[in-house]
Amino acid sequence: MERVNKLLANENYRRYLEYNREAEIGREFCGHHFEHLLDAARLTYLLLLEEGESTVCKETAYAAGLLHDIGRWHQHRFSTDHAEYSAKLAASILEEAGFEERENRLVTDAIARHRLEENDRSHLTSLSRALSKADKLSRLCFRCTAREKCKKINQQPQKERLIY
Image (tube, rainbow, N blue to C red; front, side, top):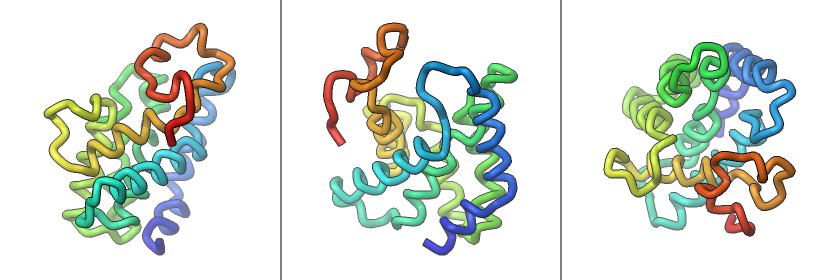
């Protein structure tokens, strides 16, 4: 997990997480903080293991999860698609952390597509599908105090109970 730890120590990564924190002060719905990113990373890897996927290494799965929402602050400020913006921001962080070009493309593609439904044909890789599913599964909607006001509650797999 050496490269993942380099990613976590990256100055830009830390800055983007702080931007997310600032953009979501007072937000009553799900946040895009480090704990969500880590939950998504762990679930992405678990889902890949359960599928028998052996071509995506642990560090690559974690990198996708840890980076998938780093551009969320930009969506709050400028109404951009945070998935595409996060992918753009992630590319240089991955490179600086020592990920190979092939891994970089795999991760940034998964990040750019993570808002798609997992069965959408636009998912070209198992990592993309796993990240999309993990992002939703990382939310504990059945415990949320804002669930009555949430527009996405009916789309969430964990709206009634814990699945993962």
